[in-house]
Amino acid sequence: MAARSKRVALASALPDFAQRIASCADALSLPDKCIAGAYVALPGEADPNALLKRLAAKGHAIAFPRVAAKDEALSFHLWRDGQQFRPGPFGIPEPSADLPLAIPRVLLVPLLAFDAQGYRIGYGGGYYDRTLASLRANGEISAIGIAFAGQEVDSVPHDVNDQRLDMVLTETGLKKFG
Image (tube, rainbow, N blue to C red):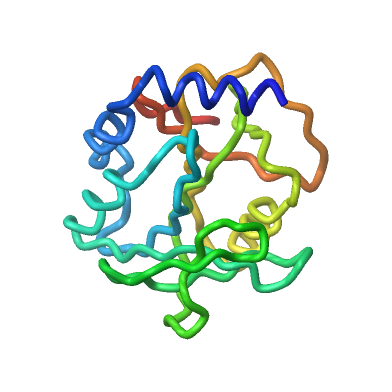
């Protein structure tokens, strides 16, 4: 897919991406000591790790997703520095199932592409769309895409099941959607 190749090229061209977005931690305006749902970046993916360290230093709890079951929302588990991840069903690193469950109020979302309306192209499983729909049905959640600025496209195809992002954080700063 062209979006994957483009993302890999952008990752190579921006080796300081993680540090650039970490400097935007205050711009996210997160509620005090909230739980931030995150992800472990795959090779060539926009890496939120330095941002997560900055958020944890500010008192926010960090939770990582697990695939609970096919066609269901992701479950999030609180994470502590030094805890190991294990490969999940799709080879994506996940926390251990015995870690405490958490309900994030902010969700950092990986993506392949995004548009100016806040729609994203994910990896095709619908996990983040189901997760956002479930979290939004049960309370307030802010969905923040983590991406390279070059991943923005004119338009992303979407349907009624696609959940919009509230904002995207790139190496050029924070972009909010109406």
